[in-house]
Image (tube, rainbow, N blue to C red; front, side, top):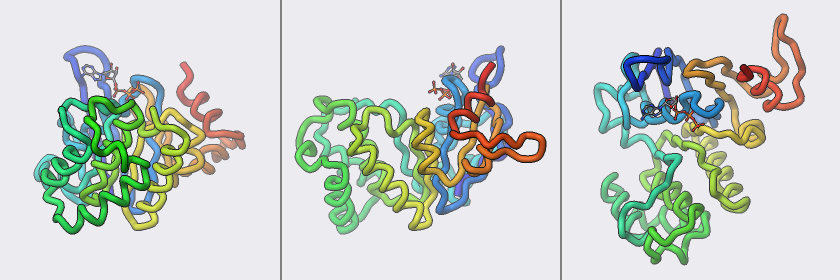
Length: 245
Ligand SMILES: Nc1ncnc2c1ncn2[C@@H]1O[C@H](COP(=O)(O)OP(=O)(O)OP(=O)(O)O)[C@@H](O)[C@H]1O
């Protein structure tokens, strides 16, 4: 479960807030797509969700834990894939996975069970002994994906996870998202790929200039209601309508 209670964040002293009074709840078992144009505030929201930055106002809860009151406990419940998977350390993939498993206190038998399955799923068995600094963009991305799942978190948060992945890896990532949601875990991801959001998500939210302009099931948003019945063909059509200037 993810809960954002009236969350706001402003970077400078002037100008509009990057995120402005965001109210959102994502239930366990949901795959939730977080959409919006460049600069809408998606990454800022994700950084508040994951405890990387603090909101100026409002509350964030992850899996029932307040990120303000118990940030460490909250962070343990999250698997996070950032939008810019830089490999800053001179480590092999395997060394990095061991390091992350240590950080999260993953027991030896659990990592022995999970890591080979994840390496196989994302085709990283051979690359695991290479230095991460020599990885391609997609290999770095897959490394972050695998690392984010080693502690089997109840909440998985991914910022633009499809970027840099080949079609094969992207398909595997989507399968992983589905299987985690079927297991009752929460999956929350930002994307610009609206076709993926349309096919994969139980619900989506559309953010514009830091504010939510729509939340709901894709089918309902496309159909509209009341005076707004529109029967749009695609989520893209609705997105362009809502976020156009
Ligand atoms: N560290 C920062 N300092 C100052 N302003 C920032 C900082 N990070 C983001 N912003 C501003 O906050 C706003 C929201 O940015 P954010 O990165 O959250 O958007 P986004 O929806 O993730 O965009 P994109 O789709 O381009 O990745 C933008 O106006 C951006 O310039």
